[in-house]
Image (tube, rainbow, N blue to C red; front, side):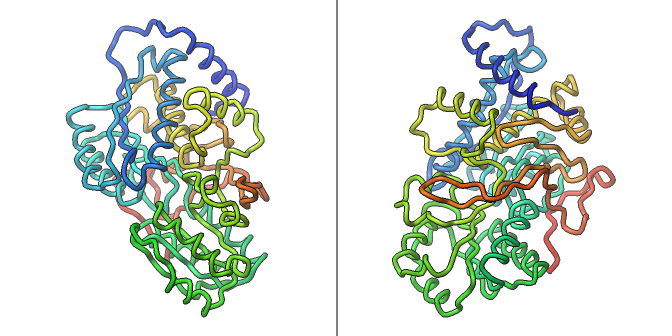
Amino acid sequence: MKISRRQALASATAAVAASAFPRFAFAQGAAIKLGTIADTSGPLQPFGTQKLQCIQLAVEEINAAGGLLGRKIELVTYDAQSSDQLYAQFAQQIALRDRVNVVHAGLQSSSREVIRPILRRANALYFYNTPYEGGVCDRNAFLTGTTPGQLLANLLPFMIKKFGKKIYVLAADYNFGQLSEKWTRKIAKENGAEVIASEFFPLDVNQFGPTIGKIQAAKPDFIVNTFVGPGHAAFYGQWAGTGMKKQIPIASQTFGEAGEHLRMPQELSEGIFVCYNYFEELNKPANAAFLERFRKKFGTNYGYVSDLGMSEYMGVRIWAEAVKKANAIEREPVIKALEAGLSVDGPGGTMKADPKTHHFVFDMHLAECKSRKFEILQSFDQVPPTNPDGVCDLLKNPDTNQQFEPKL
């Protein structure tokens, strides 16, 4: 089932119009509960706030248009305070005490791997709406963020062709950074390049002097970073302070996700290359309409909506379409509706469910940061998700529950 761009725009217009009538008469019956756990405080707050806002907007729009199956969506929200321990606690509460119908939760891959088994045991349908390292194969989970086969597989060949074949990797020291580094090695090799060195950093690291010295000695053609959080953002100022910014370019898997390019001095962000499925700068009518609605609700001083937030918005949207198609809110019929290859159009283009992997096909856009904006350089239509060696097939093997890694 595919929702056309015309239908998507009409639906959005109807949602805005309906919002003027707060006394919408919902059908009799309990509200549909959507649970979310976000990092709205602590060091990951800039990411978590954006994600929660996009969920709130999606739910508000659906309710304004009449809800789902004539029933209102009730949002049940917890703040994990950037703590995986609290993610575990709240996952238990949201699934077993609150008994929600679906869970949209998690930022870091570590938080996902804390809550995913809890929700699987509770038969609570789970959406992980965050770009990540790929490879999770779990019938109870749908993963609406982009993966390395969509991001790095387009970004790295561009960088290699433009700058050279020697790559230095800087990454967060947990599964996201570690597995992304493996993907960088794999994709680099496939394109005749090599990773000459890799370094991993805990999230609280904010001093990079020794690392910068190593990079200067290694003389790579470019850097690939997978930084996470405000501590790691300190690298950009220290890097520019050595004068190396003009000599060795940077490609990033994460830069701009929390709007840091708007907060840091312009000269620090200039010339950084990224590849995402959504940017505020995309010249699409659906995107302009989305940003108008977002700014009407949250004001204009919110920072930047990145693909991190858009993954949440679209995650709720495609779950809602699956509920409509299934004409049910129960886990099994909703899964089957998604496994039929459901797709929806949104501000960043069309996203389509991949039945075998429970990931999604996206349009991808390669961009360079210039004057605090992302300039789109290339676009790639309907890029399939990462599926290492084709090993994940949940249609044939629905009991699979693991994360596959790239073979080097």
